Length: 203
Image 1 (cartoon, rainbow, N blue to C red):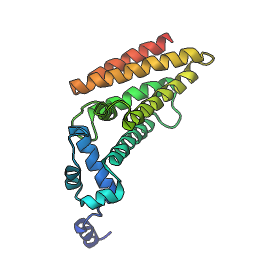
Image 2: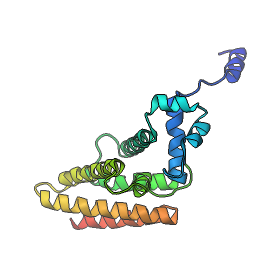
Image 3: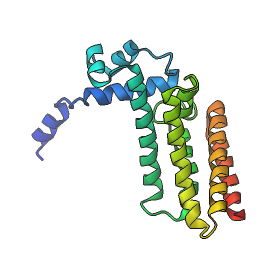
């Protein structure tokens, strides 16, 4: 590429992201930092740089946007987990990689200052019986099943022990994440990871 072409490339305006992506990104930042209830549609559209009609062309309601936010946040975590542990991790590394991915998110949160688990934070604002709470529960259960699958491979022929240990580790993980969110850093998650290692050694 010539110097003239490089210069032209540098001044060429960058293509804007699709409106749906910009809305979801703006919502993710605001929902995580300020809460779902406290964040209005006008705030999201202003930050995303779109008209309100554009938001409703992509999401039927704020509730629909919240559902998309929860799904997107969970999928983002899964992508980061798979990137960290690789396609076929050793079962022990697969379990501990769950903690490592949580620690990564606490040390370098993608949406501003660390405030704990975005899924649990959102669910805590919803009343009992709300579909959003059920959605978050399914996502947390999916992580527990993933842990259980690794433990089943780690403890062949001991399905009861694998399930019981997976539940212990899942509860340890989520409890540590809540405390880490209150403290604003990854120390509790690192302590929980060390506890999980001991549980694996004893299993």
